[in-house]
Image (cartoon, rainbow, N blue to C red; front, side):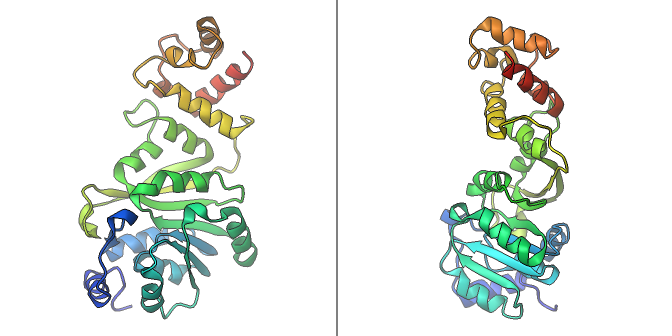
Length: 283
């Protein structure tokens, strides 16, 4: 391929040809670095079908189309489907849906794609303003998605992949790491976009855990985790008081979980949190 969509010259040509400008309301920043989209697509485990959210002008889509049997794209900007039809004209395995991903029936979509193509992965350069709701929609999908590979703000990637007792370790870290093995694959400088955002990005990957520890109602467990981090600077005891029947019950939960009264939520790893929750349920 002599002139990939993600090249600086091709992006400029497409933007000029269609008099296209990034819409802030859609969180648009067009990638202009071929190596970034190639690395992201290569890491995505997208040999079956792949779902992309926010394809833009097709920079990442093109690389996914070369590696996947089928690419299903969700796009909300009504200007872009006709442009994508042009930029991706040589690929017959790309499907562009003019639809808000947050409103789609994801489980039905994944089930359909899995039946046709064997496996479904997600790979996307996520608009910053919907990163968290998109990821939680993916996390909560009852149809299995083994790999989610997405570009997000670097600080958001740091929160998801944060190790225990670090400054960025919080409820998002605990929740995502319960469901997935999470790792940041590589950083993406702001200069790799047109227009350049004010902050750097990162490619982060979520790999579904083969076996999940049983915590009963997962949503209830996640609500418990959030409650433990409500006042981050305070001790776990202070946060537990708000959801326990009394201070005495909160202290007993901590003691029965073999934790110190002075412990803070950010000091608890995955196993410690699951143990604490089980003790909390028996209170």
